[in-house]
Amino acid sequence: MGEGILSRSDVAVRESAAGFTRRGGWLHADSVALADIARLAGTPTYVYSASAVRAQYARLDAALAGVPHRIHYSVKANGNLALLSLLRQLGAGVDIVSGGELYRARAAGFRGSDVVFSGVGKTVAELDDAVQAEVKLVNVESEAELRLLDDIARLHRRVAPVALRVNPEVEVETAHHYTRTGARGDKFGIPYDEARGVARLAGSLPNVALAGLDMHIGSQLTRIEPYADGLARLLELRDAIVADGGGARLRYLDIGGGLGVTYDAESEADLDAFARIVVPAAKKSGLELVMEPGRFLVGNAGVLLTRVLYRKRSGGKDYVITDAGMTELLRPSHYNAFHRIEPVGPSGVAGVVDVVGPVCESGDFFARDRSLGDVVPGELLAIGSAGAYGSVMSSQYNARPRVPEIIVDGERVAVARERETVEDLVRHEKASPQWRTL
Ligand code: LLP
Image 1: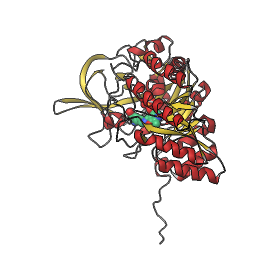
Image 2: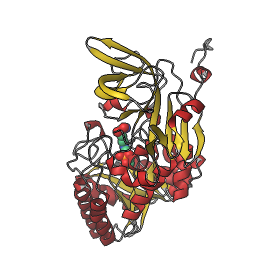
Image 3: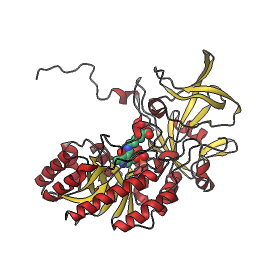
Image 4: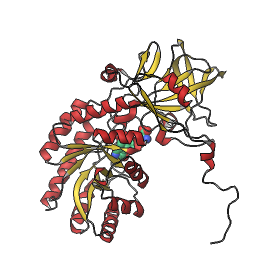
């Protein structure tokens, strides 16, 4: 802390003046003072650094350079159209999980061939959209989904390229068990011992083509060994499929997302070690590597900017009450997740406080028993690592309009999403509903 909201491992980013750094005591996004952004947009507001996104994309792309690959950004991490457009310009494709995300992706200029479609419960309408959009891959998660997709593709006289999302059943450590997805018995993917049979079925269905194998083992992974274990299982499955005569159209090896970032003092996933595992394996397989990173690309490229409303003491505790709450950033409340919090301006001696929001829930907190610079009401705080799973998980609970998203690039600033209004809150509601009988 003190140096800026980026952590030690982001030194390279800091040196290129990307991301969040302290200048003259004041936190900046790239070259723009967060205090100026608060004046422009009000608080709370999200602030993203385009150059931080670029830097992360370049790092990952370089790490995978030894093998044909495409980075399909996972839209669920942050679906803001300005960020999607930025990533598209960098060369990314997208990984989506709903018809809504398909709509977003296309609104940001992606074509069907840029899209891989993941998700455990795709509806008929969503599969229909995906077939019509001619997505690059539908990552199917069950035999029933495969059959349904074949039916839908037949109606459109198309052959839909599919990847089997396999549950590789590997041991994964993540900060919270909600973000583990690749263990035996999880709801995600085709159970490993059934995958060969589902591949045979795919071979027999005329309107799907088995084009890939896919896994996603969890999120915020800081150890990379599970990727090696998962990859080994995918490649073992591939050999079995080839032995069954079903490998002719196999082209993609999709290893999902999950690369962790630094929220606190934990180390970031070791990219070099990751590349040493993934690149040779992908190369040997002869398949094109697909990755679906979300958090890695945008997590540390965003902060939530909030203003201190009040301070109070209760039961021997010091509370700092902010104008942002769990409605804007749910992660602390939902996963007990750690997010760094720093005063935006210079601040005095630290005290130990709870930083809490204004929402009427005891679970509405950002930090408990946290050492924080001595801030007074009216001062600004920046909540770090909020670029991924921040705005997208926000809600209007307590009739709180969703907050803006501001994007900074060097010295320039743009509104990437306007603040919602109270009219937006009731737009689809009826004070006098039209009653009828069905
Ligand atoms: N691909 C699939 C199939 C996924 O399910 C996910 C994330 C990703 C890619 C991207 O994972 P990432 O690279 O961002 O780790 N809301 C939670 C995270 C949920 C992740 C769900 N799946 C959080 O705030 O930590």
